[in-house]
Amino acid sequence: MPRILFVDPEHGPRSQMAEALLGQVAAGQYDIGSAGTDPSGTLDGVASVLAEVGVTGFVPTRRPITSVLEPPPDILVTVCEEGCGSCPYVPGSRHVERWPQPDPAEAPADQRLETLRGIRDDLRRRIRELIEPTPA
Image (cartoon, rainbow, N blue to C red):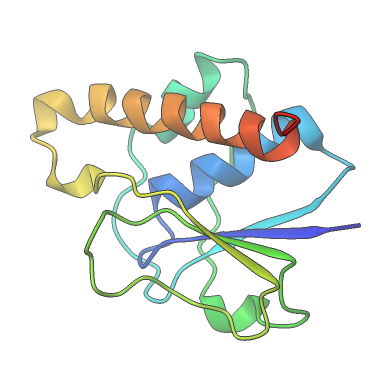
C-alpha cells in the first residue's frame, strides 16, 4: 500500500487537514500520515471546517517528523507557505510534492475560519488530482 505523508513545520492545521481529507476519500488505499518538525500552535477551528465537508471525528494528534521516518513515504507532500524556509523533508521519499498553503497562524483572528476553509478547499482539489490524475 503506498505511503503518503503530509508535513509542515508545526504539524498544524495544514498537514492534519490534508491527512483527514485524504482519509475521507481514500481510506484503505493508502497508508496516510502527517507530521512536523516542531509540533506546536493552535488547531482551533480545524474540526469545524472539516465537519462542514463531512469529515467527522477529527482528533488532532501532534507527531514529530522523527516518529515517521521509517519507512520513508512513497509520496511526501509539504504544505507550508511559499518561501517558509523550513519545509520538512524525509530522506528516502520516492516522490515529493509541494502544495504551498498560507500559514493560518498569520491570519487575523476574525479571518481564521475563512483562511482554514480556503486551505481545506485547495487541499481537497489537490488530493483529487493526486488520486485521480488526468490522463495524458
